[in-house]
Image 1 (tube, one colour):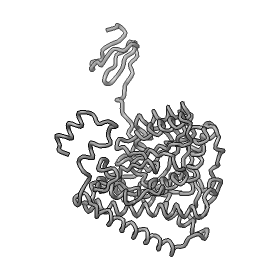
Image 2 (cartoon, rainbow, N blue to C red):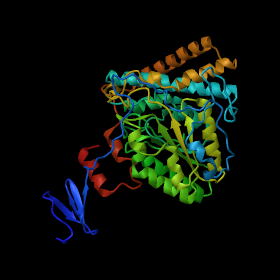
Image 3 (spheres, one colour):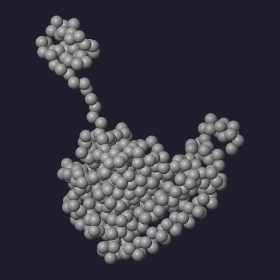
Image 4 (spheres, one colour):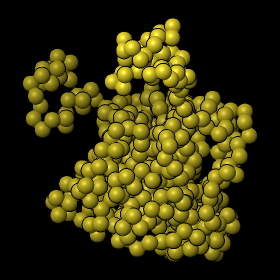
Length: 442
């Protein structure tokens, strides 16, 4: 031991290159003695726990219409402020204000309202079907319908989404048959994926919906790769990646941003910040960053935050980002600020980790109610027509459900043939799979 370091009678850990000894309670360098405090980690905590009274008064919300709208060719460094505010269009009374609020005519907005109502009715029936034992699993997007529906509204045919499991609104807004979605959830004989995917993990190339992966965050790198391939081929189609707030902690998220930024891939990267990653609140994944959108700054990517429960705002921001990508101006990162009103999935009980009334206190409201209020205010809709349309949509969904169940559910009817697992996997079936099929007798 060096002469200038004296043992103080506590356990020695190691001798460092700086020639001082670390003890459990103190450090001595030369003749100086320094008291040490035990190291500790900071663990972020949600503001409210079960039993607490939620209070979102501290959430900074700009007024509807006050956030500027930059030109689509704006440089990332010139719009840094848009990653820290929230772009909003509709006020509580339904009035649409500001430079982002004039992109949809009333008929298009009404189409968006009906799409959201359809998504919610579909979710409700499939959630009930799971509780009745007709399928093993389901995930709703309750409270988040505006995000997927408005984004799909801004896309063109041929563009490709790389979704997570809470963007069923992309498919429904794109006109994908709801009956096929139900058959897939039931994994019955008419399941278009022939039993190869978990319920709710849809896939439709024709409708721009890449196969859902249960391994989260893979969608981001896949979207960037697809967009790069489109550019290499000289195509005009762009890609959109989807991720939840919790999955931004995955390495794939950062890898995607590196490639998107470096090669200026024609891609829109969407973060759906619904405040909860299963039972973990969004502060865990966000860490010390002020917002999720701000993470784009480190990669030189333009980033914006938008009110995810404001259909008009989501459409306008999505359209802005999509135009950038299609013009060859590179990627955009969008953080959609929303709230997951329901459970993470049918396997989850949110009352175990958040107050039961939290969703009701969320200040951005219900996306369907907000767009309905806007359309009534401009004279394009009425409360009576809304009630009637809601009943008609629910009746149609119920009829489709009965039709799907005739083809089978989890415990009734015929499922896909076992031989399906050997087909359409490889272009040329390898020998070991041929032998397995022969051994199985299918």
